Length: 369
Image (cartoon, rainbow, N blue to C red):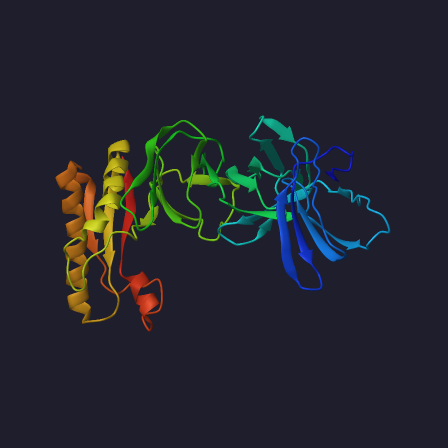
């Protein structure tokens, strides 16, 4: 008779092997009402294998010795219920770093009951399905399912790739000197992409969700303040975090200047590259905000070529920028185009990186009327 540990009869299947001949001689189900098997065996040594759904299988030896008188041989077998474990193994999908979840919620899908967890593990039963929710601050919740239908497996690993939530960047517009909050017009672009992620006016702090591992161009305008363009580098950010980013604008004064490093030209040409248009559009908007300024567009070259050729090229480039701004509606009487050639380098001309820095266009405030 086959029972569980509480002596309750079980429905089971029995295989009987003759040990001496290593031969299967019986394969039969139990009586479903009382969990019993009845069969006739000659004298010998036998190996019994008993299997019941939801219980660990069991093997036992049975020795039949010929009795002096006929009598039945009783053999009771108790099976142990299956007790498996589900264990969650969470990993940061970007860094492959092992993570410890803040919370693991497990639901038995058969009756929607919640299963108690201990750390990253929980008990599972045979022929049950479970839904697991894994939560970790800074990561999106992940769902996984587990079906238990094999009693030969005690430990069920649930491997989960946790996707970091995007960092939240809090842009804080301030006067550079007083650090007081000022209203601005803000534009955010991902470097290398034409898509504008944010464009709008904001009276104070603005929180944006940005992608991990990227670089962004930040443009800011405010009346009576110098136009700001800077780079926000998130290339080393691999996990969720809140980032306070001060956008510091300088009150406009004569002599203030800004390098327009996204205003570019083909080699030995004064024709603007199309990639320059977004930055020049921001310059035009700045001029609309501040209609009392007289501004110089200053163009510079590296030292490749003759002094006179570089001066002529820089003058032509500065004029191209002015012409573009005027074509958009800027007041030509407030714009001065001037080329400086190679005479005002900001880096060494003896290596490519330095020469690239020297080839630049600057925006200079000449006067505030």
